Every structure is written in C-alpha cells, then in structure tokens.
Length: 206
Ligand SMILES: N[C@@H](CCC(=O)N[C@@H](CS)C(=O)NCC(=O)O)C(=O)O
Image (cartoon, rainbow, N blue to C red; front, side, top):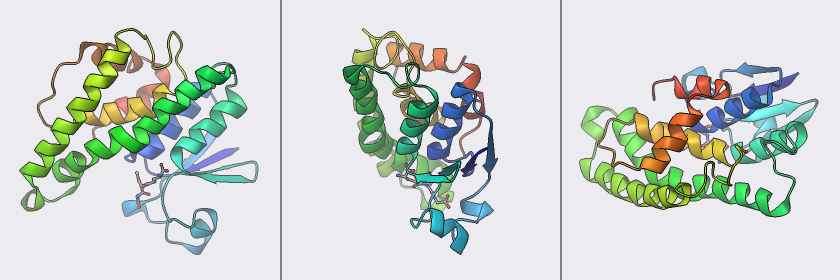
C-alpha cells in the first residue's frame, strides 16, 4: 500500500493527501516532522537525505519533493484526469504548480511564520505587511487568470489546482485583512466543496 510520511499541518503534505484523496487510492499516512520527529532517524534520512516531509513509498519506489510526488501520483493513477494527456494542458498544470512553489508560497511564508509559528514577541509587523502586499499582488494575477478559467488550466480540475489551492487555503486562514479577489474566492470556495479537499480545508492553520 502507498505510504506517506508527514504531518497534516504541513502545506506540502496537504498537497499529497488532497491528491491521493482525489485519486481514491488506499494509503497509510505516518505523522512525521516537527513534534512527531522521525525525520532525523537514519531510516528516514535514507529515504530523504533532506530530512524533510513529505516522502512517499509506492511499491518500493521512494520519492520526496511534494510537487514531484503530486505529479507522479497523478501520472500513475490519474492519467487523463488529474494529469492531462495533452502536452500543452500538462505544461499548463505544471506551470501553476511551479508558480505555487516558487512564487506564491514563498510570498505568504513570512506572514505564516510571523503570525502562526513565532512567539508573539518575535513577530515583526513590517515583515507581515510586506508579505501581505506581495501576496495580494500575486493574487491579483491569479484573479485575472481565473476570470476566464474555471480551474487553473481551464474547464477541468487537475493536479495544477491542488498545490495552489493548499497555499491559498493557508493564506485565507491567516488572521490578517484579505483584499477581495472574486474569481480566486469563487475557485477556492468551490474546491472547498470537494470531498477530496476536506482533510486540508477543514483544518485550522497551525
Ligand atoms: N520543497 C520541499 C519542501 C519540504 C519542506 O520544507 N517540508 C517542511 C514542512 S512544509 C519540513 O519538512 N519541515 C521540517 C519538519 O516538519 O520537521 C517539498 O515541496 O516537499
């Protein structure tokens, strides 16, 4: 059976869990990382020398890097649904996955760390405000895109939506003022209705 290592409070683990729930694959998830430990053990480091989560093992095949995991699972178990068969549609999904990991998530991360993970006396309001301004700029771009697209690549839900929706979910749950983005909100709240998103979107951010 597919095995996933990683705590559900991690946005990168959330992507993988949403993906497998969408695909309807049987899996076992082991809490690992932060207070759960495990990631520093020799056994775990043999699977992922970065000592980070998530990691999967699928019939002897070990893989780390969350978006690579989502791509692998979508290609193996969801070709033609989560993973588009058309090369351009697939590149489009890849593009939004890469944008999530290189642009949007790094933009919101400082606000997440200062508001959620750091002790109140370590919070820096300037860092939070700078992150908010940058994130809103990126969300305006996404909003303009979603004005003409139901999902990130068009009419169908694909792997391209999952990592981005996990980060947008985190963003909307941060205790700060969010600017209105009607198309992002329409997209995000529709995804919150999917059965496969429930382990992610019903969680508080911690
Ligand atoms: N680029 C990696 C980043 C992995 C990563 O930074 N994981 C974090 C959680 S989001 C982690 O392992 N933190 C240490 C821990 O939880 O102990 C990926 O997308 O999988």
